[in-house]
Image 1 (cartoon, one colour):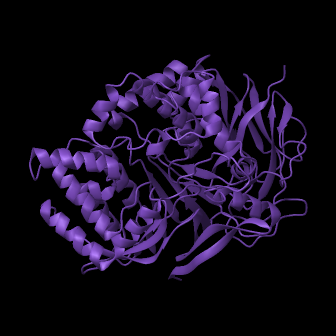
Image 2 (cartoon, helix red, strand yellow):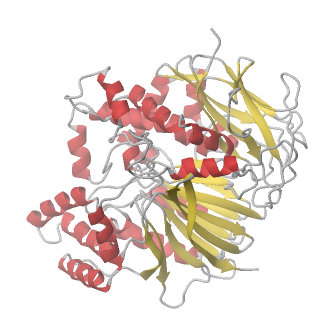
Image 3 (cartoon, helix red, strand yellow):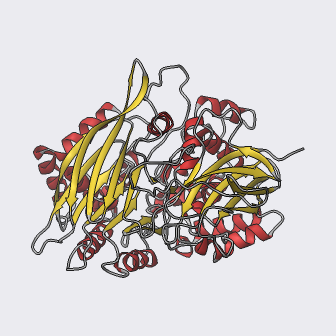
Amino acid sequence: MAAGLRLGPLLRYVDWETGEHATVWIEADRPCTAEVRCLGAPPGEGSGKGSGQGPGEAPGPAAGDAEAPGGPSAASSKGTAVPSKGAAVSSKGAGGSARTFQIEGHHYALIPVSGLAPAASTEYEVLLDGRRVWPPADSPYPPSVIRTPAIPAQSVRVSFGSCRWSAPPARKQDPIGPDALDTLAERMAAEPESERPDLLVLLGDQVYADATSQETQRWLATRRDLSEPPWTQVADYEEYTRLYEESWLDPEVRWLLSTVPSCMIFDDHDVIDDWNTSASWVAEMRATPWWRERILSGLMSYWVHQHLGNLSPAELADDPVYAAVRDAPDGTQALRAFAARADADPASVRWSYRRDFGRTRLLMIDTRGARVLDERHRAMLDAEETSWLRDQALQAPGSYDHLLIGTSLPWLLPPAIHDVEGWNAALCRGERGARWARVGETLRRRADLEHWAAFPSSFEELTALIREVGSGPLAPSTVCVLSGDVHHAYVAEPGWPDPAPTARVLQLTCSPVHNAIHASMRVGFRFGWSRAGRRLGRAMARHGRAGRPVVRWDKSGGPWFGNQLMTLTLNGRSAELRLDQTATDRTGARLLTVDERILTDGP
């Protein structure tokens, strides 16, 4: 029987250094050779039509091409797959192939594509053992393309958000509103010349392992007794694959991810709510009979579905785990051993990574797996991770105009909530004695008090690094912290004591892509910015003997509630921000711009 395409394709990495390379991720239903062939080439070669336009430039595809975005470049982490040598100067002959590797009976490939031309939109198709499986013959969507930047790239457009609960609505009207990624895909498909992102940055909770849909629960019930732990949550690798299928087989999202490159990082719901919130939480979870399989499966499935595609071909070529998985007839044990090591010794693994997009640098930070949880030495990032972040931010000063720090958890929260988290952290480390420490731990878990503010030393270190990066004659134009998690959007800006950084520094928070927020939480977030909220927060901080934060800040936009995406357009040293929310009218779901602003208008 011929191999079929089970999941994907996902266009992940696109080269912003030369414009010649990309990677495409797929899952097949059996072992096979997976191939990406750029259209127009004879069998075994592949060729592509270039639009002559690069990301961030005015749209203008060649006749017959459906224009779509390109992606990223230089990085730093662990990896796989090497592009073929001798890339052509045009897209003629572009393509690549890879043999699938096996994990828990599933078959995956990360296909290296080489021979692309800069400043081109190149249509592609996917073949398994020589048989075309993508695009489907009856696809209602424009062709999937690999869009490469002009070299050197002058601009990049980045759309970002987090928290996408992918469960399809049980009835025609979605009770939590239209999905922002679905709506973006529909707009792109209907308006081929409309503005579209060069990159999607997905900042956590790509799947919800602890909040499954009714449809998934019915499937789980065919495998095991849902009255036993972990109940309606996922239990193992096979059940994780069900979550990715539910999310990525959504027709609009499947096409969107096939044609817009993406960078991803996990947050707690990718594994479980409150993941790694404290040492006592970890101890309790490890004492349960089902947790070990859950955490290993969560890390394994994240590595396969999300992490590999974050990496450049050079990093992938140096990744010993990927090499071991690919070299084995069945890579399950090699990957399982890696996941066990990552759980037991988080400092042995780096999930964070760097990507450069022309003169924009993205540093994506792991704020879940890299934590230090000893109450007397709590840190959001361990020492090695902190050193890596500092090195990447300060490397080659003056070589980039914009620094994007991707962290699933916001750096700057509403001030009252920041102080409450600092107060809680002080209680938990024993500033008010053992009884208050127990109260603090209970509150920490119930109220999710685990953002940067709950790790005061890490908050101060990140603040100091941002100030250092943003100061001096070689400082970038902007330093933007991109975050999600809190199910609403806002823009916050610190007020610095003299001397202030020369860069404009902003906290840009955007979530959810598709989820809901309780009315009480809306009230709480609004209160957190108010004068009364600030006074209450300071009183609680004094009770916990927590000091004042090293900077003060206020919101300059929001809070906004709804399913939404933020988009940064970075061109030279200028930066523009737009927030789009989903809305429904008689014609269906659409994206409406609710805020648009110029952040910097540099030369």
